[in-house]
Amino acid sequence: MEIYRDKWWYSTITIMVLAGFSILILPAIAAVILLVVQYKKRKEFYTVIQEDELHNIPIREKDSKLQDLLQDVKTTEKKIEENKVIIDDQDKFIADLRAEFECRTNEERESVLDNAKIQAENIVKEANESLSAVVAKTTEYQSDVESLTEEHAKLVKEVNRYKNQARKYKADVLGLKNFNERFPYTINFEKVEQQLEELNNELNEETLLGTVIRLHLHSDNSKELRKLSNATNKEIKNVLSKYEDRYTTKGNKTIYNLMVIGLQAEVQILLLQLKYNKVDESLQSVKDIITKYLAICANGNKSILSTITKFLTEIEPLYMELIRIEYKYYVYREQEKEEQRMIKEQMRQEAEERKKLAEEKKKLDKEEQKFTVEMERNKKLLKEETDEDKILQLQKRLKELELQVKEIDDKKEEIASLTLGKAGYVYIISNLGSFGEKMFKIGMTRRMEPQNRVDELGSASVPFKFDVHALIFSDDAVGLENKLHKMLSEQRVNKVNYRKEFFNTDVEILRAMVEEIDPTVEFVTTMLAEEYTQTRAIEESVMVS
Image (cartoon, rainbow, N blue to C red; front, side):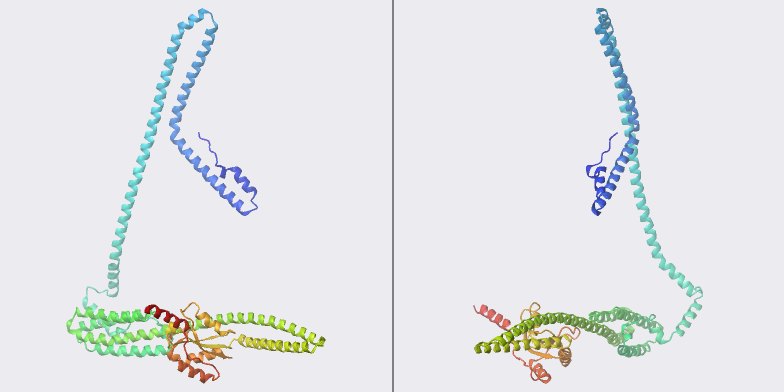
């Protein structure tokens, strides 16, 4: 029997060494993992050994018999060797006896060996036969498993086929059951017609042609949109009533009623599925629905085709108007979202600018402290100095320091004003190379240097730098920016995303607006566009050459 030995890396000694460092997390985890690996490896080995034991029992039994026979042979050979020793020590008589019996002994030994070989061959033959029987049995079992697997697959396919058939007949069964419940007198068709007549009388015109399930629309939440929607629905009802009276036969009237119910349902689904930026698709769907119904009617009764064509042509714009009314809700909602985004963006910019203002104030405080120390030093020197020239120099230096301190105080007051949240600069800028001569951007910044904000806007988003036409300082920069935006609301390029502060207008109109607000503000009407102009010049020179 094979002896099992663990590999060194998951042996008991390795695990014990790692367990000795179990105060650390990684060695403890490694010891547990190796212990699990050791257990699995040993279990696999002994499982294989047990299986081999079951298959090798007959062989071991035969082998045991063979070993016994070989042991007998060895015993006999041992006795022969002992007899040889005795014979060697005897006289010639014994040598003669030995010579006499040697032939007989050899014959017996050969006979024993021959018998042992025959038995060994028989044992090996029986073992091979047993092994062949086991292999044949295993092959038979594998064949049975494959056969059963194929049979199981066939049964699964058969079950699925019956399930599919059951699904097909389920609708028929439910339909017959429903029909039987609603019309129990199916054999008596007079009673069926009577029930249908009573049902038709119970349904008025509005109920008959209306939608069975009324879905709640977003326009219902707005008083303004609800008013527009109700007015359009009233026009639709008037059209439906007008054309219903034109059908005299029951068959044509039934076709008309079914068509109206289908139209109402499909339009309501379009209203419910409407999304922002999808209004054109929904309007096209209305046209497709009208075209589909017109094609269906054209293949039917030709006598009512002209009337149905007029009806569909008249009802189509009303359904499209319902789509547009419902879409206004999504436009309003998108505007609200955009306003919220603007507020968040404004708050983010304000926080960023307040942080920069605080850093600027910190720098000014340090500079003011330096100038104050320098002033105190010069004042002390001035008191001690007796030379007139040096006194004049010190007095001049003190005046310069006082002016610098005053400038710092003015800047600190400006920072304090900007930090309050409303004060800042409103800028009017343009970019001839990127947007043309009629496009202007009007924005606001609270930075001490508004030009830095303009430079940021032109750094990566556009190919050329912006030209500044006006920088307007205001204690309420937010209010001034909103005022200018409202004055140019008709010229706003993007009327949905208010963060896009671009306006299509004329520079003279902007100058007049700025002069009306603050006549002291310098307004530059010229678009310098230096980089754009230089680029054009290079391109023209290349073309000429």
